Length: 153
Length: 113
Image (cartoon, rainbow over all chains, first blue to last red; front, side, top):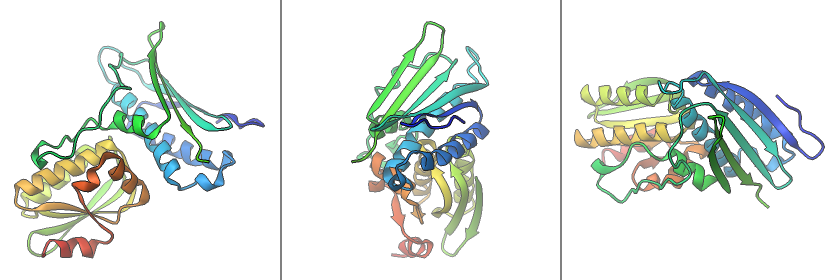
């Protein structure tokens, strides 16, 4: 785990196993980061819950693609960077191309209960809970995901 | 995630969940809810008091359980959600669909009203 610089900077740089157990290390790493942020009021706040959720949803999406026969992989990289006004998470994975992940709409709830969607909320949640959500496919065949959330005033 | 099913009277059962209800455990949860409904307990109270974290896939398993419970003439109610779960329910507007109670007993009583 990286140490924060004077103004924050890189606070986490982690290679995560692309497995269910890998999610344990993501949650543990996030929990370990809060004390280093210099924002004690954020601990156990809704802001914190939303950032955790956004990170977990992107990580879950990556892990679920890890066994795709087209491009299987065993791990991905997660880094967290603290800026004066915001926190950034950046994920890099070598999996298959993901179609329009940053343009998802939340499934409606004003439908008969039999028509309620059980899936399809994860990336819509990321969009709702962050101030920036970007995905790009690099020329080297990697997926790069960036989310940022501005600290509350 | 672990599930401990506690049968009550009148088709009611309390499912106590422990750990994380997420993409890795959602399928197990779906199976547990279906088994309970098939065993004659379509009125399910899902105790989330010892659940640390729920993601969208975990939430999907609760929706699936609710659908199957209602199809069997019952329902699925949530008890003891932590702040993270309340945030998730609010973000997805599923707090308008899933019945949420602060305690198990209030959720159980809700079935007799």
